[in-house]
Image 1 (cartoon, one colour):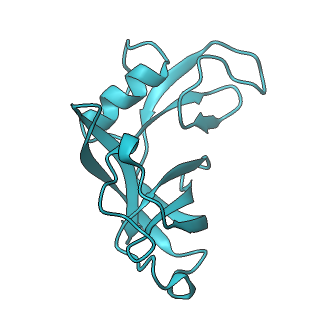
Image 2 (image 1 turned 180 degrees about the horizontal axis):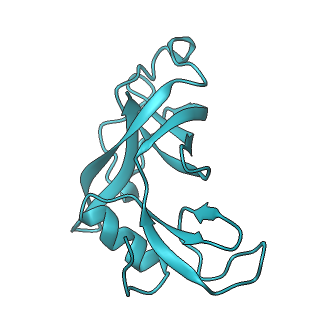
Length: 139
């Protein structure tokens, strides 16, 4: 899927608002970047295009966080109700940081590296503005 939007973080977040996980792709290096980059660091080419990711991947790393971030709208999280943040390696190759949903943050030993994941999008109010955050859950 090609698009004329600039290769910026702002465009990336616009796509998240639309329920799409997008990255930039460089044909000469056959490499996908998420979040987007306007220049391929391997070839230094500006020949980039938007591509939609499958939204599938595997959990590469994670941590349970016991302090809710009011600034991020993650109210209600606490030492007794932690949230999980992780790195997901997408089928297309890039690794992306995201909120991990559908797992038990109070029992990190129940969460496994290598778990198949699928993308989901979480709507939260941040600074009195409705935003969409990237998240994943077990497939």
